[in-house]
Image (cartoon, rainbow, N blue to C red; front, side, top):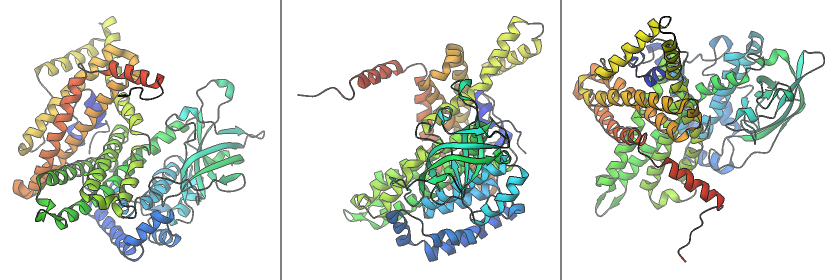
Length: 576
């Protein structure tokens, strides 16, 4: 059982919490059997209703046929992660993610519909709803009788939740709120019967920073659905505006505490990001399979293109990235299933890596497909379009990089403040100063070691150990250099986040490959060993560049160029 301390938050301080990642987690036999049963049911349903033409029609008509949604509801797919006590399947996070991965491999719009319903809407009720709210709504959500939606974003408030204008004002009787405002880009908006809505509940004269509260709102009088928004990808999913006009919401339908809606949103999004990462993996695996089939069928210069070095390089790179992504996702879901309460940084890392890995895989698959893949109506271009939104969903990757860096630096920052205070009162702070001196002595003697990785992975382990030291050192340096101003140092935040992302990926790969070697021996685990080696080699190059750039960079020059370009309203130069 791993400790409750976040593996990645510890790593920012140079501490490797090995018990969190070794042994690499796996579901119980009973849980695995439940997943296989669900996957068999899904494949059976897909063979009847989701063939290639049906998938193309979903994209073309921009709608999932009702009979497909009904079939999934009847088979229990709207209640996978909901508790058995309320009519759901009670899947743990690993089982849910693995099933959602399979759905995404069939159709991204379908995965998005199910995920918005469960990972966002139903999850908010499960985590923060009262017993009354759960008893009333969860059974209906589990059966798919009612579909849930998550209404957080607004046209003027995407990443910045503090800009939300939707407001909920107490009624004179004090037993309810009147909800007014408009939410944008609501997935499942066209047919949701239940919304999780975030609104201001603080008076406007309390300042610019609002107190947000989360509410459960039933579709009914005063709630208006906007038309479907035309989209680049995931066209089969529903995306609409939802308008609330003095909708009466009983106080009993507050989720969590009044004024603590931001906490509700962040905890729900933490789970949803992990679900999105699993969906990206499902689509990525499908793209790799399509690419492998293509390169073995397509012939040029008298041989298949699979025999050419640059094509092989693409397949190897795609495979290694998907291996790392799979390792990260199921390491993290395993931590959740083991009772880990803080996985916010790990979840954000998975989402960023997954969405960008999927985009790279989709781009390479497009290149492998050649001109055929560029033609409208073929699956290649559809999957490329579907992939793009993942870098925006559940927090843009830019916002999440800032979140990863700043969240990870909180611990080292607090420790430095405590040490500084202890130095002003050395007698009272003797114990703290002794601990600090011990940590510095350990750092001087050498890096933290991975004692549980298999010796075959010595090179990968040294890479992880070396750059864990670099991460901790540079975190301390930037905190000393910038202090509270680090919140504005976005170039530095990006480097810190990118180092953290690669380190978590390498750690997951090492842990998973170690398990494979211990079970099947070196030759039996050759596939994992080779993929681990290739991924670690790519990660090494990125890590080296990021660490070098902490001290040697052109950040200020880039800022100046951007400012001048904006002042010129675009690119001002011409060769004529």
